[in-house]
Length: 381
Image (cartoon, rainbow, N blue to C red; front, side):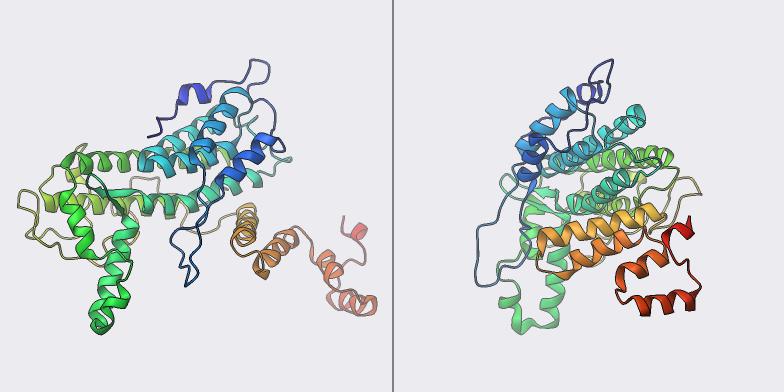
């Protein structure tokens, strides 16, 4: 098991003269880390032709990111990759450590932190954080919430098992085909009943710590970006839903929760399986148990923005993230090309965009006259 991140060492300045060191984006170390991060999604259906999935070398990513952050550079990109790797190895605990690291870097080194902004443009920083928040939902949902000595199941497995259970109830004649190579509610319940109380209690503490660290990171990043950063709502909702699911599992198993968990909202009304009662032999599914939703008693400032895109820089950053995703997963898809073009076009005034897409000079001149646009780039300045 990977050890905890040494935040004190990772947040110490590189040197007195250059606290954040140099930008190492084009170094061989960056290239090696990016290569080690590549992996296939294990949840994708492979059809008849099953191939060996590529797995990321997370220990290498952690080791190299830590080394560079300690010795060479303070870089938001490295911290995001380290958070991803730590969460992939240590679940909720690793994700919370990563959020704390990002909070510290933004608090201590914002003016010198790599990637440096181009003038007032912090698009690169916003884009990296937007990617991590989207990725955080998956990381949260894939971390084990129940486990016996050999097998751990996540909130995503639970949600998938519930959906499978519904499908089987609708079409029982297809039950064998539907549940082939899938985890059923019954299988999940067996692991759930075998989960030690200490595991549930630690998982609950770790999820709470994750929520707190995420909220602190959001507050600092919003302050540094003047609220022009991405929405953190999806990750916050996912963490809250998972915490509520763990609390329900613990309550039905008669396991007391620590750190004021009794006051936390439940994912479902208490039933015969409430705290103090013996765990039922089969735990009936609650079909909305892990659907993300806002915390019912938020303590955030009333000025918090609603979910969605709230700045031009954030919108462009997300277009680039869409392009990067399709370039990696579907290289032949035109989606990557179109998203990249849209991101570039977003920085063009209308008359420049028209000149970029209309090659016929006569048609262009007619359209420029019709729309009363500047006849050259110089006239727009």
